[in-house]
Length: 270
Image (cartoon, rainbow, N blue to C red):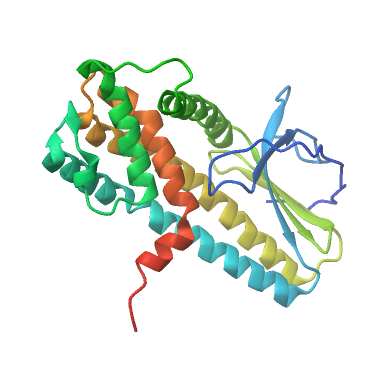
């Protein structure tokens, strides 16, 4: 890691939406910082994690504490996915003939992500039992949307983990530190002049949070693949595991987006 003078440049305001829990990652045009050369070359947009902190350093530290708790809660909620999928599959199998049809009315108190997932499974299975849906049907559109978003999200996540990433820390509206990080861990950091020790620590924490979310992204993809295989037993069509991937990815995103609900349902009564 080297210390260098930081020249603050202007970035475009355009933000590309990415899955829940990764919304702090933006994709912006690459702009070389003096003295940093990792061979960005002709790359177009790069992943940028920008932490915007208040000028008061105590408040800045508190904000990072809150951000860290949110990341931990997101990971904890994500890790409930395999058990939730197992439970959902068992309930569906008890409710009917797995892979063909099941009566969701006989399944107790489904949460919204589970109900939405089973609804898509039923839609996929319906043609095999002679039910057809018109083009533009609401249920069919939900499936098409899940597949479209899955393709877009996988493309963005691939860019997130495969490219150099910039992690920036702004305090009081001023860019004070930027780290350029490769997937293999090579890193170079530029600092503004005359910084307090506390600011170095704040940027270090921000960097750790950025890398943690990138790891969660990989973990989410792994859990999606494993869960899609489990869910495939409910699909009556060939290649059920592949068909299940976009639907389970949507389900995983819903779980990660609903962290507050996860905290409420897992809260231990006093």
